Length: 397
Image 1: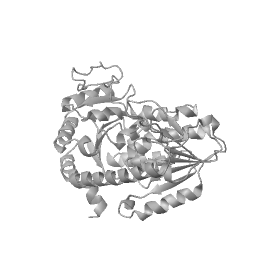
Image 2: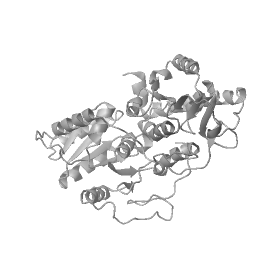
Image 3: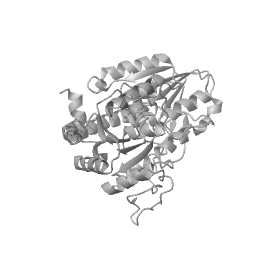
Image 4: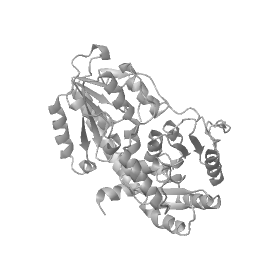
């Protein structure tokens, strides 16, 4: 097994790798603060000669990349003639296609084991001589390091603490990641979406319909295809739900005769065998094999709704206007879950509660179901439309 795959799929190795990564970044950050002086404050209207812009979000999580997409459109509207490049990762950049970006710079996950690749990337970015570097996430140490080291004439990001980090700083606190993006772009004085954006091609939509008919062994010519519920079995570390929960949910879906498709994340291959075995006798469910990320997004876009933990596909559904039932285990997830009228947030629910939420959606009642407020401990109850106030993000996610 490849070393990086082993780290991603082993909980303890992943925790250790994250610890070492944070320590290294903290060391670099301290050095930069000591060597590089704080930038002078500026306003967006005082900037002149903005011809080349770099948007910076070198993160490997799909959700974080999707959350950043409205930033691209906002800068394109504010600077229609500028060249806009984006620093992404080789894992997330497919989701950013079809957005108004002139060029992508990609950071590979192999750079973790080959740090000289980071040096090469920084030298290439410095050679571009960008006029404006935009750090999307105020909480990203790697993004801040890149912002300060590429030598852009001006920098922009979210303010943090009493020290000035950027020439242009978005002030204020946000309790939701989608709102943090709007707060970041407020100095631009242009409209900004407070929901992820994803644009699919007609070819991708056609391929999705073909795949869905294959999953359900349907060969009709109806363009609408079968109505189904998507179930994503995955999530990051403590956001995951145990295998027993998903097996019970599958049994409940069968008992209620609800058509569904199960999707597995790349780190949940250990769950494949028991779920595949449970679906062998299924009358209403199918297991979707791993797909390229945009193909997966197109299939997900045909679902009636998505049942999911706090995960990347949750934000994919938000970008595709697919209703979500978010299964929340950690209060911090409340700062990330979709919150449109057709979205549902369930706090550590029983299986029966999940089925009730699915049935309400299928019956067209999810927008009018009663709201249950948070309990006296300020924790959400099992059925929550409007989540309790989450801790401020300080414009980071």
